Amino acid sequence: MSDNFIWWRDGIIYQIYPRSFADSNGDGIGDLPGITAKLDYLADLGIDALWLSPFYPTPDADFGYDISNYTDVDPRFGTLADFDELVSQAHQRKIRVVLDMVMNHTSDQHPWFIESRSSRDNPKRDWYIWKDATPSKSAGFGGSQRGVNNWQASFGGSAWEFDPTTGQYYLHSFLKEQPDVNWRNPEVRQAQFDVFRFWLERGVDGFRLDVFNAYFKDAQFRDNPPKFGLRGFDRQQHLHDMDQPELLPLLQELRVLLEAYPERYAVGETYLATPEKIAHYAGDDRLHAAFSFDFTSHNLIYPWNSRFVMEKITQRDKTLDAAGIWPTTVMSNHDLSRAASRYARGEDDHQPLLAMTLLLTLRGTPFLYYGEEIGMRDIALKRTEILDPPGKKYWPVYKGRDGCRSPMQWNDAPFAGFSSAKPWLPVHPNYLRRNVAAQRENPNSLFNFTKRLIGLRRTYPALRQGSFRVFFRADTGVLAFERQLDDQRVLVYINFNRATRAVSFVRDADPEQATMLLSSAGRREFYTSYNRFVLNPYEVLILELKNPQRLP
Image (cartoon, rainbow, N blue to C red; front, side, top):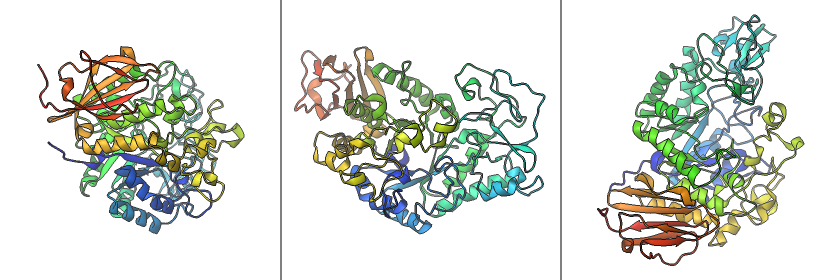
């Protein structure tokens, strides 16, 4: 059986928001030594790589995503020596390290921008995007007019900020404290590639590129066409402020750099993602992969059920398979409400268990957000408690992103074992029951179910690399599919219902050749009657077919 393991394709990548994972020095903020101290936990869980959200120096206008120095560690998180030790210790445990690179914009406190805004003739003036106002242009349907054109910032308001020092506007696709760099300037391009080299030389295994497809903007700065939407940003077709043709040669150049180092990797955060964008930007001579966020929409239009999941899988695979692109699977991250909060009622873990099953058994690289393995929920904050600035300054009805960034719940000690001091964000009140230590002791916990799933992924290459085939329609609220690699066939049944469901066994196989690998309902054996069997409420059932050949 073929098992050519490639870490970024077949492994599990675990995302850590550093200030919320583990605090080693008792200041209430997680840090790099805290992560190092938890590497044995991560190795035991079975993950293959860490994705670290930004730990670079930052004024925290966007909580780490406004970087003031690309090649250092914020003192709150440690030192470069601490980072080197983390990489060394991770590699000793065969865990790779992926860094978050935010290169569409810097902090307005970055030395580059401080120089750039100092005068119009500063050598770094063109390192950012400066323009004179065009007051003759009208606002139109695309949003309130201010500055150069009708482009809107993602966090609200015009994307142009007037700077009285030099009497021009600068572009910021996000906060005004996050000016966009000018990737068309060869000096900027060289400086950013030097940043990649700096971290590659320190042993970093890969990069997650924040909003990479916004790097280039239309050279003519044309207005975006209008469309229907609630916010100004949503009332535009973003044709001219992202996805420009100059991006592809840049990604190809980055791939050449990565190929100069063994087994390095880059995955992109696709801004306003579609399967077509991913197919365009990923491939043998560009990014290794790009995020598609298929299962993170949950509302009245996209209810969390088997039909929604199957439709998303079909849509994704149809486009990516045709292009030969390996998919990624994401259920939660630092920008999204946690999957358990989106899909579950109260403290019930049935839906988080189904989400974890999809994450670890669908075709694609799984990205596991810290705390998902124990079903952590979002914390509830009053408006006065929100720290994430876009929540209180730009979007009046938006609750910010702090809810999904609460401290990791390790045990039932004060502050959930995260710190000996009051943490920077509150710990969820459920930590007394929902924590790693308690779930380790409970054989029926989400944590132990996750470990068993990860163990199956490691044991059965079909679950990592195998083909994907849906063999049962989702009309009854059951999703069933097959993963096959060579002569190994694994069947996955997922019952989204709170009631039992009678389902048919896969038509082209003999049920007597089926061996049960995992049942979330505590099933002791598997058998069928006239090729039908019953799934318990919310049950996950995984089977192996011993007969290598499909029946006619």
